[in-house]
Amino acid sequence: MGIHSTQLSAATALVQLLTEHPELQTAGWSIDPVNPALHGFLHEGGVAALSAYAEVLGGSIRAGGEYVSGGERLRSHRLRSVWRDVPVEVAVALPVAQTAQVAA
Image (cartoon, rainbow, N blue to C red; front, side, top):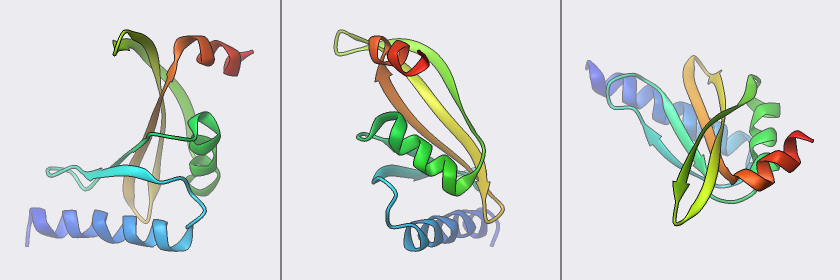
């Protein structure tokens, strides 16, 4: 089965996460084709939504690098954890000015 079995494990873990925790903010999800890992990106909900994922998954939220998109300076925030033996990373991008308010 090889790579397909690892993708299946990650897909199964995602289905379980979303089924057991429907209260979590909708995210865009992808499965790493080489390693059995889930990658989620939150388009809405900001740090509050990311914190809700942290309550379910454990782990801690870390600020990442800054970048410019659409003329706006953004900073990524990432939660890394493990769900059902599958590595999970959930990210959100916030305007740098809003990030400073979160840190205060």
